[in-house]
Image 1 (cartoon, one colour):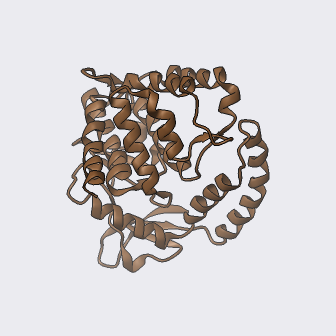
Image 2 (image 1 turned 120 degrees about the horizontal axis):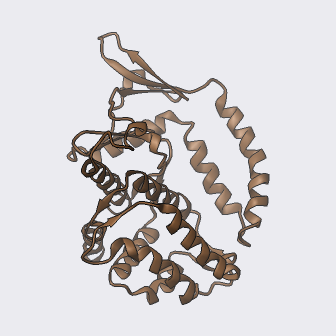
Image 3 (image 1 turned 30 degrees about the vertical axis):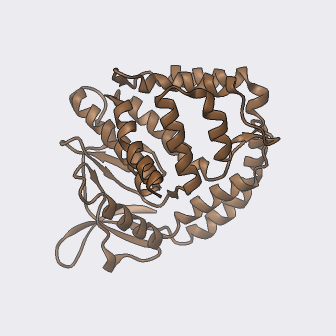
Length: 309
């Protein structure tokens, strides 16, 4: 679709997202062709059956064609964040919205193109990073409904350290089993108990193709790299990401046989895509914060909720 600035009869300016006529038929046809290409590429990296992964990709992408569903997603997210002045979701304009047209309150901030360089102080960039992580953690652990398109163009930035979030076509419901698994993983990571990761991952549906848990060596090697972000008593600055990416990639190469045999549930795909994508956004901001405390604060309520049941 294409987003336009428009004006209602009462004089209010709004943003109007209009779907290209016939694009749904084009995309459905392209998806059929894409499946064969992805199946070939998928086979180069894993022995896992691609069908369930493909179905997840297909479902999420086709959902983006339904602007009525996107409007419902926006209302749901706006309701959840209505008391948080740092995470802004534009209001839906119902009277001009339909399956192929979406009217939204015109909400403008600082564009992503302007946030790098010296135009804004690093402290403000840190606050933007915290706002992004807050949105993700609340979506994952509290609402269990995740904005799953981390493209930096889907955000603009506010002088109070807040963010405006756009494009709610790609959203991901977080199943309870995965929600509980992520809580357990983070609690264990905070306590540096990497040895329990293989069993937790297996309970989430992440294991070797033969059904056995991943090796402690593979899991702990990855965990050691990621633990740098959440060490106690330190603030971590997301900077040169290529080093982190290459180190994790090198772990995969060291365990190449096992890496290619990993099986994972389809629901993990867009959750991990979101986390990895925002990792890059934090690097772009060079964001610094006490990420460990943020994780503890968001996992604790989820843990207490689980125990109360």
